Length: 632
Image (cartoon, rainbow, N blue to C red; front, top):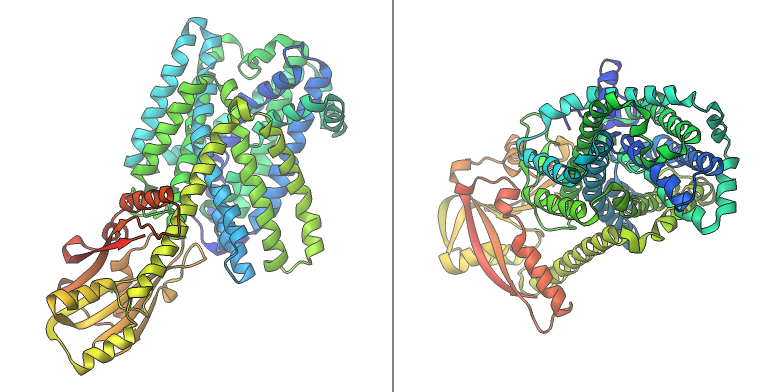
């Protein structure tokens, strides 16, 4: 986003001069999703509890108490006060937590990897559902203003979403600068709305007592669990507090939530509750019924702006998460475009943008109302929250050096609450919850296939590769024709001869004066310090190895990194340097270690991968591609 902080600031909070600017920015970006939940969360929870029967006082107070304590336990205690402290060099989010846990264990853990993959897959699924349900729920206010406009709700929603995704390629810097002020207005307005209506029935404040929540669950059986699934809509977006840690820092996010956002949300929910207690018919759309008819259209406009902001936040979050997954080797390379010259975090992934738009439009056209779509919403976020809780236990236990029993005593209650919400959302499986689950399974299969296929490919290529030291000794005994200039050969393992080098010797029968075996590594940290970016080693008169290290949230820029290498003593002229890249043509093999369908999926994913030259930002005029055919 437009503002970012250092790792030290993420842990300890930024300097005072930027604190309020970062707090304002966090209100605009971090809280967009959870901040628009009052549009539908209370209405859906009460409707789920009533099951078509008249709304009673027990239902209203029970739902309000559940919402209040869900916000306190899941969002405030777990994310704001606990997990925001589990930063990976200043960064947060599911994949950052996974990398942090693996670093704490000192090894690659497949269970942790699986949790990270599941959590990340569900977050991307949430990136499709949030724009659909948020914009739909805002535009549905038109039905109350003029019932004749009901038929225009879906077309208008589709139009807004198409425009939103269309402007992504131009960057969001200018729009993002207005996010904070707009959301401040939004939270202020919903707080005032709530304050006005609490006086309709001040006894609604009794719902602060957690007994109303417990009593409702204990006395309503299955209906109580169904209601809990709808109550979870009030905390969707809570995981975004942690995911955006690196953009704004821990203290600004905590301040924005505790002193402004949380009070505004609670006041509005209690205002809706008081309104429904005094007028049960208002539950039809308890949010929009809080304002007189003359203010309905302005509120619809403001709500639409707020939901667009909430959608923008999860869209850019999906871009960032996908890039992290690529850097960690979980997905093939995607084209990344930079929309800002000053802020590296502002990126645009065309393919991800198209897939998200298709998914969002399908959801809108399939479900058509926010009430129908609410059934599909909670399962994605609750799954991510369960994964975060389990991975958080590993970090607290191993990295923070707590005793296992103490770490469990702290985190298990949160995991139990998250698992309860997950179970409640599973009850809506046939009503729409299958959508994010299906998407999550598809994403997990793709990641599993990519990891498995890449491993098999490495094993197969190792069988025909030659150790680099053996080749150097052979060339010293019988040197080929030497040509001027420097050749850079990209490879994943510098101990073996790159395929492009072997083909250059075999077909062109020449060797450059200087040959660099270049390896690009992804660290288990979000960013790598410039002093650790380059490692150089001269292994003979004509051969050197260079290792470039990038964090999993950084975009690998080879030319910029090589500038550092020049400062370390590598003398080369970029205009007389050629980069040799291998391009593999894959074909399925009868002896593959994967089923045939998985072979074809891996090959299709490989073909769709962005060109290495573009991904590593290497000047195309200096690249020589060498094609090879490999069976897998």
